[in-house]
Image 1 (tube, rainbow, N blue to C red):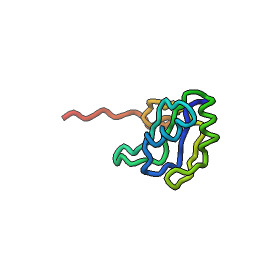
Image 2 (cartoon, rainbow, N blue to C red; image 1 turned 90 degrees about the vertical axis):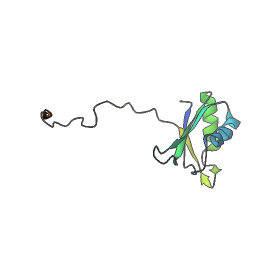
Image 3 (cartoon, rainbow, N blue to C red; image 1 turned 30 degrees about the vertical axis):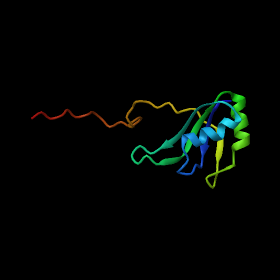
Image 4 (cartoon, one colour; image 1 turned 180 degrees about the vertical axis):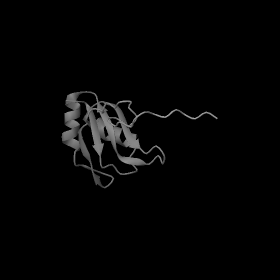
Amino acid sequence: MNNKLYVGNLDGNVTKDDLEQMFVKHGIVISALVCTDKDSGHSKGFGFVEMGSDQEAKTAISELNATSLGGRNLIVNEANPPKIRGISGGAKGRNRGPVPRAQRF
C-alpha cells in the first residue's frame, strides 16, 4: 500500500491546514495539498495527504472515507501513482511529414 492518499469532493473553502487537522488524528501527516487552478487560484475540489506509514494511511481511509466536511461527503482512498509523461509535445504517433523551413526575410 502507498501512504499517499487522494481526498476528493472537497468544498472550495477547505485549506491544506483543514486537511492536516483532520488527518493528524489518525497518524503523522507528512504533507497535505489542496489542488488549485493555476489561473484563478480556486480549489479544484481534491487534494492529497501523505501519511507517516502504510498502516496510518489504511486507518485514515477507513475512518475518513464518506465522512462529512463542509457539508460534503469526502472520498478518501489510496492515490494512484503519477503518470509518466513523454516529451513528445502531443503529436505522438502522427506522421505530419517534413517540417517546412522558416522563411527568412
